[in-house]
Length: 385
Image (cartoon, rainbow, N blue to C red; front, side, top):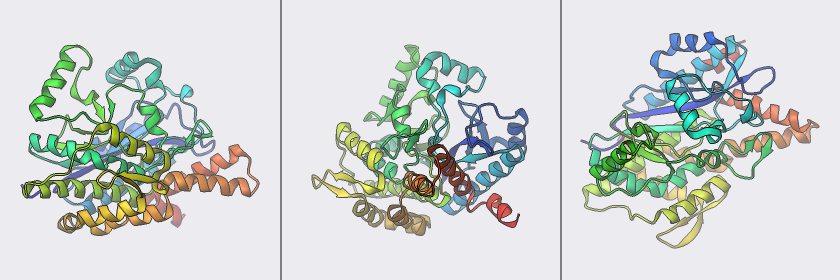
């Protein structure tokens, strides 16, 4: 094994919106998913709510390939949705749609989730980005899961895209986490000593009837139950394609860096989950405009400074994996803000130009539609038209 990052995959979830009303589509046309599957095969899936759709890249051998695959997926979904009067938005919440209007996708898995989790799961009008990095050794997956948890708040801060909920600015950059955290088995992972210990925990949950299978452990980072990967799950959806690729590259490089230290009989210090949770909250609340605690120094530092440290830490790994420019794009995210910052600015600009509050939120949806498709064939088609 030459180190993590040799293979990578990205999953994205989108909210489908009506191009006329800009509201979430509560009942997409039945032919829509069939058309998506005709175009993308098994790389497109239903999500829990009918207003959501999920895509996943193939197993990619470089970050550049993952970017190209993701651009194809976004563009294909956008073009297909347009035929039905819809559009996908890559945001973790819709600016004004109401969760109580949504319906869950019928089927055994989602029917069971709806039954088991009741009204809590009905609120899940939220979307996230998941990144899989290949790690063949199960013990290594557990070891790196314990260590990389330190960096989850940093990655979250770079991805905030859910400032609005049911028409209200919630005062945080990632309100999605507040919704998702109401479910069981979410949040930071438990520290596990070995893969066998993790398997024993899963087996106990299954035997006790708490879960039916391993994929219902929804930690911020987890060993995948389907693939030999360590799966990042804490991040909001990145509206901008290049932001999504940056975060995936940075995660792969962090795992590579931790693996590189391991080869030298070194490791990242593991801090109590309560401390990491404080940084997680700061990232959720303030995003790139805020500070996180450097627990080695015992002080809060601007995210901009911490991002510079991260780039320095992983530069050898980014060079090995051929994604240094993608990693350095984190500086751009810090400088111009995440989707949450830009959504708020679009709303403020619309209000300043005389829009009503409802019209201003529609302007946010319009920006999300355009930015989601930017850099894809769908955007090129729109420009040609």
